[in-house]
Image (tube, rainbow, N blue to C red; front, side, top):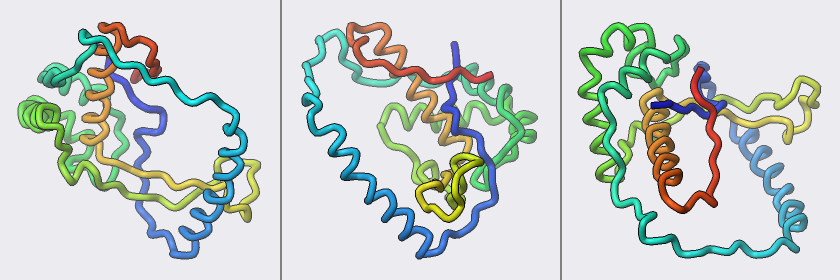
Length: 183
């Protein structure tokens, strides 16, 4: 079974607090772009939403297995975030001992639809330049990066994997996602 990762996942940087003025200028530059986007899409047709066939109903996610968790840990890069409870090297060393616990947490989250609060926490690193030739004085050249714990990223990827499996097996293939497989 393939395990997917979003290209932005896996950055582990030391968090730095952003100043109020930095956040204000980031928000104002984003707000200035909003009318341009609205103007560019004003003539676009409204989306058509069709009801899904009854066979496409997803009542519950399939639970996570020990093999999936173990495989995800084995391919984990050695980078980490300050939110990670264990560094990746240590996690790899003890995966056989704690895989059942991780499976239980993930399976409960998938069956109840509740994501643990600590999975929703991120360290926000200050905005940095999007491209090397960007103007450092232009606030629109910067964007912040959210660093999440590896457990929250795994849960997200297990959900994406199950959604893709469901969409691929049902007749709702008009919806298309293309996550990148882990290397």
